[in-house]
Amino acid sequence: MGQRIAVLGAGPMGLAVAYQLARDGHQPIIFEADDRVGGMTAAFDFSGLSIERYYHFHCISDHAFLAILDELALADKMHWVETKMGYWFQDQLQAWGNPVALLTFKGLSLTAKFRYGLHAFLCTKRNDWQPLDHVEATGWIKRWVGKEAYEVLWRRLFDYKFYDYTDNLSAAWIWSRIRRIGRSRYSLFREKLGYLEGGSETLLQAMRADIEAHGGEIHLKSAISKVVIEAGTVRGVEVAGQLIAFDKVISTIPLPYIPRLIPDLPVDILEHFRSINNIAVVCVIVKLRKALTDNFWLNTNDPTMDIPGLVEYSNLRPLEDHIVYVPFYMPGEHPKFAEPNQAFLDKVRRYLKKINPELCDEDFIELHASRYRYAQPICKPGYLDKLPPVALPVNGLWVADTSYYYPEDRGISESIAFGRKMAKDAVA
Image 1 (spheres, one colour):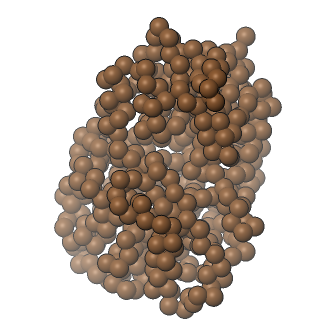
Image 2: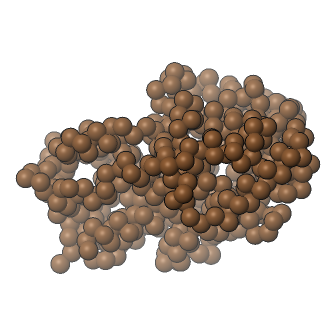
Image 3: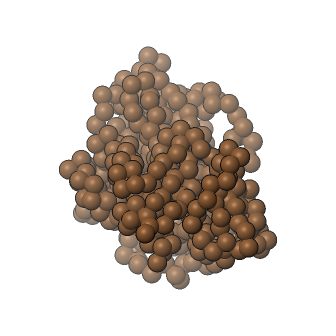
């Protein structure tokens, strides 16, 4: 007979846990505080357009994502598109992302270009991340590309993504980002990324339906207040003041919430969870009447812009209007995170008009800002060494979030793969 298991969080990882458990004959019950499934992949109604609050794309190496599409008969809804990258630097839009663009880039010496290109190429060929695990990222990059290329091509990315955490990040974690994008290329000169018809919502709703069809349940607007532990064993979860009994509990919510929701864990484990830092994000999505550029991803290095880049999503997924995502990353405790949404909307209007002077006020159909306090963990050197094990020293309790598949960066495919494995391990 199958086990009755509580799953905390209905993001891709939580859905993957429940999906696997339900298909294996168990009864997963998901508890999600939000009013929809998906977490950071969830969609919202942007004046008649259902679209993710935060942008997502897929690479040809996203094997777990592609496998679940096959299982759910959604493979025919996946489309691959040749995309382009650009670089906004010295008040001009330049091509980026291939050897010719690097050679013709204005603002770097030939030596700096060669060192940058060699480093990027070798990152795509590397498979063993362990030697980089305890290496600090900015020093590693500077040693390879030199001071000139670091200042032009890397510094603002670090400064406007990680702020005070910049000088204590894992090189393995940064390397995995370089490799993922590099391996999305199907030739030296061409990049290919994918989108799903209807966006991530297509997969989320299919997973939800499959979970429910196999006997699982999903409870939205149902934040748990506590995981109840007695005599070293999970007893269940408290929801709206009521104890609901479970055989096991699997949590996929961001780790900073764990000390509050599972206060009876051993003190040393609680301290590990409390010590983890996270970056927050304010992501502005813009609907335009005309294109900003012809690039999907646009890196920015501009002293008047406090962003490392933006994504013109409609250059990947065809839409009636032109959609641009402009993410502002910062530590959640940074004063900027407390600024009102309008401050970010006003900045984005200025930035987009500067990049494309042909844009006027009438071209901005609508702007919307979404916030996520725990958008991304800060992965310091040796990050995994500092994490408690997924299977905690409490009978029937498993805890993980997107940082547990370090050094890989957070992604839908990685969350699905990790969630399915966690489900298998929990009932082994």
